[in-house]
Image (cartoon, rainbow, N blue to C red; front, side, top):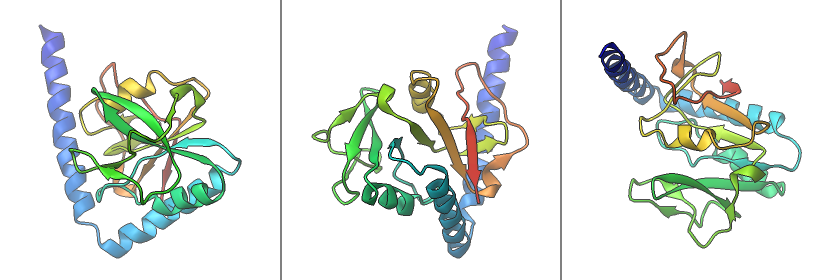
Length: 188
């Protein structure tokens, strides 16, 4: 009984934390967000230099805009993949350009199903979105658990990189057993 009460308490705490962080992100000045996003993209460009297979995300307004680094990788012959949710699971699709993406039922731009599917075992780097992170790599997602399930299936040598604005970096956060961490956090 105490386990379920504790679990419910953690779920409620995470929900409150998500709302507070998103409110903070939404109040950020557009110029500050743009500069922070540029800094994050530049750091990713320097970090991931060799031809690799990179799973990214198409940024929402509340996430760092990593489109410049995605474009750089596409122009530099990296194999760039984006996630697509299918039957409540993340599938990875290779893309050649960002203009050919389609809008999902949730309004997120994602690859068309005609793009080549890429096995999670082929991915070298994953740029992981999140609402919040700790410096130790703990991650607070949107609450659906899709990335946690996906990250639990990748090869151990695949580097999981979280990206965040400074206000998304927390000293501590509540976690549950299924929560997956990132290996490295890039911030402005």
